[in-house]
Amino acid sequence: MKKSFVIIMAIMVFGLMSSFAQKPFAGVIKSKYIVEGTTDPNILAAFPDETVMYLYDNYTKVVVESPGMNVIAISNGATKTSYQIFDITGFGKYYIEVTEAEIKEALANKDTKLEYTGETKTIAGYVCEKVIETTIDKETDEESTTILYVSKDINPNADVNFSSHPGLVGYPLRTEATQEVNGVSVNVTIEAFEVKADKKVKLANFLLPADGKKTTMKELMNMLMGGEDDE
Figure 1 (cartoon, rainbow, N blue to C red):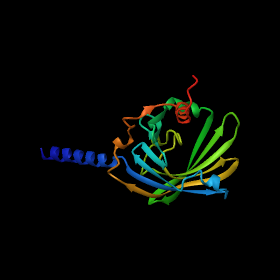
Figure 2 (figure 1 turned 135 degrees about the vertical axis):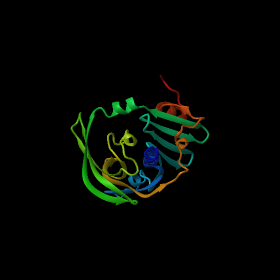
Figure 3 (figure 1 turned 30 degrees about the vertical axis):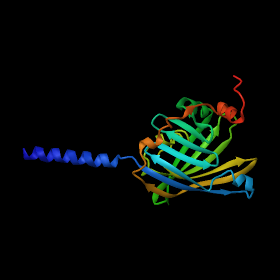
Figure 4 (figure 1 turned 90 degrees about the vertical axis):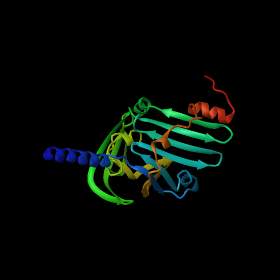
């Protein structure tokens, strides 16, 4: 009887420890942008100085505030769906949905290879592994490379990266890539400088607004410009 009680207690303790270990990360990640290769103020203005991302398990949310309109980007790793929400003064709230099928279609002409190098770098207090992401355009054979530093302590799977870096395991706290803006090639680095767990970040924070209306980018632009959809 005593032996059975000890076994039961051991199972309960192990289960409790496992539940704590599997508890998803919930918190806020603040990142800075570093743009190199140009001094053109028009190009530099295209990038924010900092971003604030809310993360809960495989859900992400970024809010960009500007006069007259706030734009919210939500990524739902559970359903592999992303949303852009536009809160426009005088017009209301609208959102554009991009489904898993649409994302796969957009990526169909690209081959991506991920190389986990084993090299590490500590970013915002988290040890991150360097990953080299190589993407080849099937139509043009053009090749691009992105350097990522990922933390499996924040997220240990690939679902959170389904739209930005498909197949990547771990959450990227630093990305290094080359982009072309107005015909100028610039090097853009995005690196987290603060990662803060916050119990106030709940799954409910990633829901679509109840008063939001589903739309398309074309319909939204027509509405803002006072035009009509010609379809």
